Length: 579
Image (cartoon, rainbow, N blue to C red; front, side, top):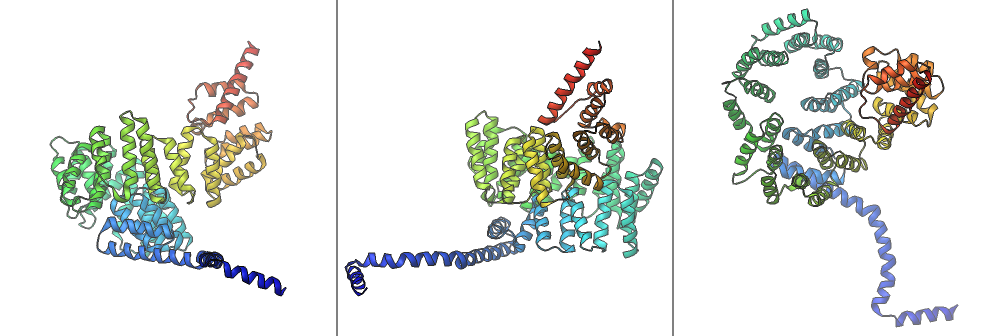
């Protein structure tokens, strides 16, 4: 043993310094790497997160919105549950008119599940008219014990939008108890009666709103409601009268201005251009309000006026990069592709570079350059890949341009790291339905159910597709039954359970269940296909043929196309045999 030790020592002496250092350093580096991964890396991430969080809050306080947005995004990359960064993103989204704010409000309510956070989420959803999101937020607030004035007032506004008089009355009674002097709640009751009541109730509601219009505290909302109702009834003379009265009110809200502008432009000599210029002056004082106004103008046929106005704002010494996107939208709406391409090449959209490349792709595609369009689209995805909100905005842009396949690819990239929220699920579901991609619909439904087991649309899609494919019939039938028990009036869910009976060999029960639907429901969507299937299976070929003959199918999945083709052949064979 002594000889062996001496031999090793001798060899060690003859090794060079660097070699000896390497022999010692390698295991030390390995130990260090493990230690860094266990201790140093999390500490570094925490440091980076806190640094970007502090920067975002500092920039936000200084009203440097672009820098605040960029720093908040970086903080969220380090930690998606960073509350201050989420709040900054939500606030900036709401100020800039971006519906992405709703997702940030949803995440805030998830991270910190309080009644207040859920009510703020509901308010954000209401601002962007995403009433399904608003309903979800209020439902979760109620589950947490919400029973305050803000909750019941929000629930009243939602009921007004949905025309649900019963639920409106329920929350109105609560508001009346909590705040007996709440005149705005009484006005909302009369507005709902005017909008959703019987002809007699509607007339009474309108008279009451007209009376309340003379109350200085209620005048603006009453005039807004009366003008809106006049537009819906096609009475533009009356709408113009209410709009001119509303225009004279102090401190007009944004939605008031938009309603007035929409009415004035339809009246010859209504002075809408003067009012538009006044609105542009009011909303051109900061980039976020300008973006909101520009978006509405483009969507309501003012693309030329918007492009000119934004170009003027961007000629300032310190142009606002936030205005690049709406100007590009306006020029794309005008199909001025050469001008748009020239502008895009000379701009830097900072944190929105992904959208600049997306517009480059749109421009090149419309200039018949498919290769350049593909390259630009690839660049857009690269810039957006690590930012969840950027991926959502990119997918929405692609969907708005009719690029279903590209939009679906971006949404699925988003889903690699994020759960399918309502917007993403509904958007992807619609896209795959249009594309007839039943494999993707099933995959999407299963992913959704892992996060939201109670989701009725996902549960119905999963059950229906398994039944169409005749696989896992018992499990699909159980899911269909549970779903229908939770939503007993849904025609599509009744049809799904009927299909389960058919797959289990009981066509008569399938037909009995299907025919509990109203005549109107039996003619809706693709339900006639299943009605004809059950009629044929119970020997009523003539009725099945009559149903198919009067039906215009749309957005059929491959499995449904196969059913239609099989049914058509069997009905024709039966008719031939009888002749």
